[in-house]
Image (cartoon, rainbow, N blue to C red; front, side, top):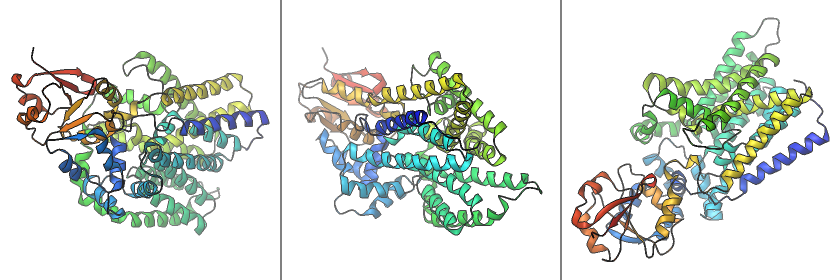
Length: 527
């Protein structure tokens, strides 16, 4: 598609939407629950391990809720080496780049929720000019590049994770930057471009192992280009193949130190991600695929099992399908092949193990990040071609698509939780219920799945200062509870373990589940 002249009216419209997208990136930055995984980001960046926190906290003692937040601040006497060591021991599947950057950010700007989330917002905003460059390089069209940038700026999914203190916005930026530089090297195989491509890939590898999905997709893209080059054509892939191989070899060589950590601690990494290997039905996977891919443009939730959720989302999937078809029909081989490989190669790498071994890897929206820029580029191309040809229906589709994205961002911006909060989704409601009582006490322990530490710290931001936590050792010594608490209180119990529930005796009171969704119980006095 040749570069088209954009009328001032359209340019003003797109710039307005772009500015609105930037606004949503920073609006209500500290409103949502600081969920379990974000707590772990701050914990690792601060130089703590979960094990040392557990040993210090769960000692059959009462702790003021705000005291838990000290583990979100830089550990006294620690260095970046402690941050790296924390990941090496307990979370080897997470490379250290983002966490080390977050540590330096924490030292400069502090550990408030807004400060912690500003860093991923900046990485997300950095992706916008890179998306423009990628769209221009791929389609040689300023209009497509602008549309792709606008779609990324107002993407409900991207804004949601831009406001999450995790490495996923940096991963998105690395993927888009690497893709742009790959195409740049194919067109201009200079050592400068190769050096930048190597740097982008090294950043990607040290951000998340799933950057490898993009690297494999790029490898397939180059291979197919080589195989399909015709003799009469000027070769485009052949001259750069050796340079690209060298660049990828260099980035992998630089990644070897952490690769050794990952291999050495494979059992730990595998145990931490065991939840992705739980067998689910095919219909569950299909539902999550629909929700994941459509969340780039629409993220209004009417309930996981509501037909309305999927009717609206299926329209988005239809538009994506049409976009991919139009790209394949109307663009040069280099363009449509890039779109196909960048979307489907990462997706198939995740789907095939789910089918062959069981599990739900492909149902995790953030694992599919490698697929998303290709989808946004395809939809941008579809809309650009229709605008150029003056198709009013498709102009209406574009406006509706952007309206849906803005409505989704608005709904999310004013909510204190959203679907990506996962295990911490109900923490705000749990905290609200606890705060409504006078002089509340909450009993908790490490728990069956060892997630209580993260969620207790998460809730410490929401609980009133007068809330106290009785943190029991493992296994829970229930006979000590009565001696540690005033006789007049009816304490809450947050996520009790099976041993706690089974060991609770009638003479200790009545254990009542007061909020099942949040696994909140309360010990009522016997009447």
